Structure formats: C-alpha cells, structure tokens
Length: 149
Image (cartoon, rainbow, N blue to C red; front, side, top):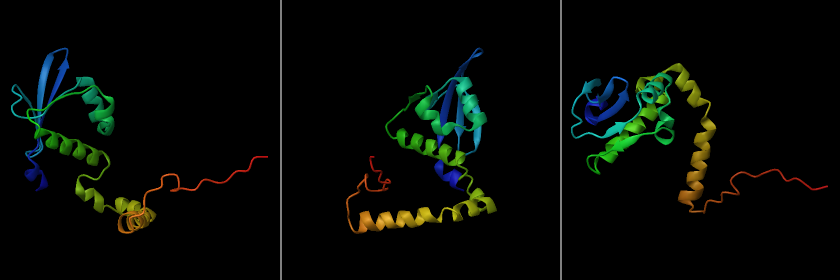
C-alpha cells in the first residue's frame, strides 16, 4: 500500500562490454526493466560491476559516499525523490523494511535489549529541549582521572 503512494521512479545507467543500458526501477509497480528512454526521472550513472556488488552484498549504505556515481536530476524537485530512494535503500539494508520484519521474535528481543537508549534519549530531550541547557560535548561522558607520577 505504501509502495503505491511513493510512485518513485529512478533510472540506473550502466556500461559494460556490450554497451550502455538504462534500467528503470519503478517502486510503485515493484518492477525493474530495461528502457531506452530516461524520461523525467532521476538518473544515476554507475559502473555495472559496482551496482552488481552493491546488490549482491547489500552495501548501498556506503554507496553514495564511497562509489563513483553521477547523478542527473531533471529538476530541483527530483532531489527529494532521490533522497527518499536512498533512505529506503538504507532502511532495507538495516532490515527495517519490509515492516513485517519488525514484528519477528528476533527484532523484538533486539529492541528490548536496547531499553537504555530510550531512557538516555528521554533524559537528553528533557535536559536540552525542555530545560534548554546547552549541549556540552566534553561533559557528555566523563573520562577517568589519571594522576601523573
């Protein structure tokens, strides 16, 4: 249902020894197909080997920062769609998507073991948002005091 609302379409352009290929990823229809025309979609140019590696070993989270990409946006409004696409890739790699994975016994027990983080987030919210105290980076975590001999 959410996929129908997104209607994201991204084109990947790859080059290999057989030539140049454009792959249209349509999240709304859950399809990937080779296309001749780019149309009015964001275009990501990437080497075929890099795209293949990222797909096989699930490393899209470092893809944008460490790989050679060329991104072409038809308009400034397409930047938001591209940002959503990258966010969805990250959520998939972190096993947050599909949402049904969050209801597995493993996911629930992992989240229950992280209860301290929720308390710490609440404490930080109370201290810095409600009470408006400045954030003191050096004072966040106290270091042990060592004495010189």
